[in-house]
Length: 493
Image (cartoon, rainbow, N blue to C red; front, side):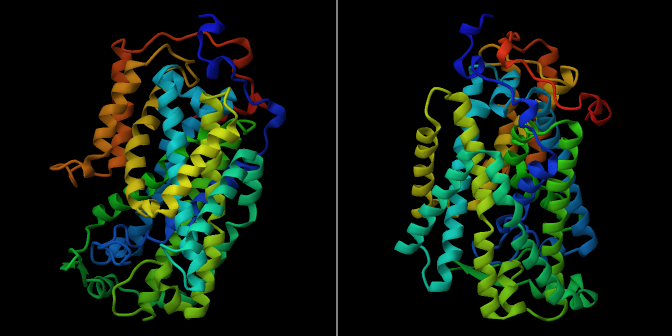
């Protein structure tokens, strides 16, 4: 098809040249590590699911530690590997091989017209939701030491400035986001290490049965008393951790394409993901588990059954130090704000190439500010679930398309590719089972189930001919060879 008949965002796309690429430790690893060290990820890992909003008490007695540290770590490690292999690796390799962002590469799955919507604008809009969540909670933590919370004028001002600064850094590009992410993630890592040192003496005395008994508590919810349910089985603990971690990470994994296009070769893709995703997930989540176990083993807890790591910092370190730690954790949340804005900026720059990104991203940032200052963004857990359902089938279909094409990008497809959209619709329904009456709790690990459904359905639909035809890319947008191509073959996924 002639270049003029392609949408502008395809025809005007140009691969990231080799000269602009950098080693994995200068972009991919450090930025992803900043996401996994974000306190919003790890502070509820021991809880898994709260009994009541903001209670800090697990819905299930003992939370994810009910069967001991060994089972909890097994679930965490499995979840980290699922994030790396299922959601990140193929998008990262596609970005490296093509030099093109997700919103171009995704057109082989959803078509050049469908690509405007998925993953294009949907990914960008969801990132402004993440930016709003980040700004809301950063505002809460930064204002708390001064006696202000939500709703208040100081919280609104801090949240608005936070979102605007994050958007500015995201617009500047991955190089600047990586610079911000180089040192600030060390703050939560240092806090986690200090908390571990302060509680490590209690690990030898930690007993899962005692923890279950201590966290079998009741809380009042809207005038009714709710009690923590029976402890989870070992398998249920593993499934819960996989659901929590993979759901949180799903959009960041799909955005691996945008990081891969900045990598020199497949080795960079692999090492960046192993260090920044798999290792960082186990370190951050694992330290959180150890701290809670040590706190309960040493008796540094109250009688309220709280298992949220940040909620125990005052008990472990004293109130003053705990407040300082909360303030530092808020500051360290800035790299994730930049990450969300960077992905959103890439989305709008790609699908709306003729619109000044300062205008499109600026409009999205205003929306994020409204969501943050009104408190709508305070329901972070609900967003995790929706994102897992939305992008599980996206990552599954991308992997299927990559393998069917011979481990390469198939190229853009015309219109709306039926295989991609049918697999997404059904995959989303599976991933969102917990929101559907009668299906809640009946689909194990919904984000992974959505991925599997998206993968399997795409393969079947492609094999029966439900793929739209592949279009010819313009010469300027043809995939560019990566640096050191000879190093790529042994590293193939």
